Image (cartoon, rainbow, N blue to C red):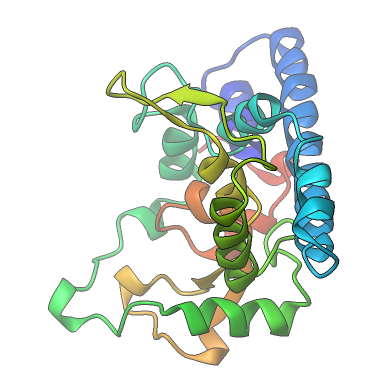
Length: 229
């Protein structure tokens, strides 16, 4: 989100006031996204007590609000999906990462396994290495899904969302994905990064989906450090 704002200010040369209004919107979305990580941690911890306790906490979550915030964070609410301001910002501010020669698929190291996700989560204590958001383990999400399916009468699962193809789909899997921590390559696998402990960190879904092929450390740069070329 910081990259989008910097791009609109320095490259698009938009007036500061409209961008400041976007800052407020993005901050609210990010705060809601961060809160969702804490909410989901409470849901999965409640599973140790009972399905009833977990469902009571789950049913308090505003799934549509979480989905809207998540889509803001991962840039899916831009006018043209796939050619959004975030993509333009990354191309502008980090061309060396977007234009670097990618390794052919057959030369890349092995893909991630569920065990990689859990190991990276354990090493980080569950915090996203990109933005610090709290996440839940891959195995915790899988366990929650099994409990939700076994006790469908307890868990609120009726909200739906409209996909890009116009088809409506259940919202609850999307809501649980938003809180899941995944192992991510510090040096992108598509650029030759290895699937090793030294090159894997735990990140939230927002950082994972919004990163593209840019180096993970680039996302630590605050917006004010971005400069027009």
